[in-house]
Image (cartoon, rainbow, N blue to C red; front, side):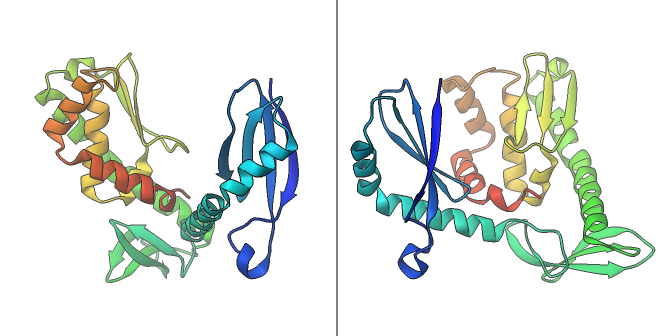
Length: 243
């Protein structure tokens, strides 16, 4: 059982400049230690039932620099979130491009110089978003599915694949079930091809090892050398792909 309480806290991304407070949520449970998390410009303190206000206050004070750094980074991520609108910025293939709407009876999504063009008839942000989603799903169908099947043949596990799905999810880029269902988040098509190939490799390798054991990672490494760099890159930039 967890009990929560929210109170104002004079710590924020701009506290030294504008003294704007953030909320602090105290979550008490049967845990034995104190921990801090930052989520949606709110500090969450998880602590034992018996922790006193003084202990919590001292714990927060001891970690003020860390809290402010996390708030700064979260604010930066919020500024970089993809908004499908004319003039918006999109991080496409590791390049920051400017979104532009182009009026035409022919529906098409393409890049031109430093612009990401969404072309269609009587475009609104909502309609442009639909066209962009359709384009990414088409790209994923043409790229991810054949390469996943090709790699599975190479590894001798194609017979284990029951289905390959493309689905937009909020928390995962890929998934593999014990029943042989591979699932990929089609938003990954905004990333460089090296990142996409790593995600394909990761899930197909689960058809061989349904865990994250050393054998699994050795297999990933043999197919995708330097995969740790791709994981790090994705962690640093994945917030720019969701819309």
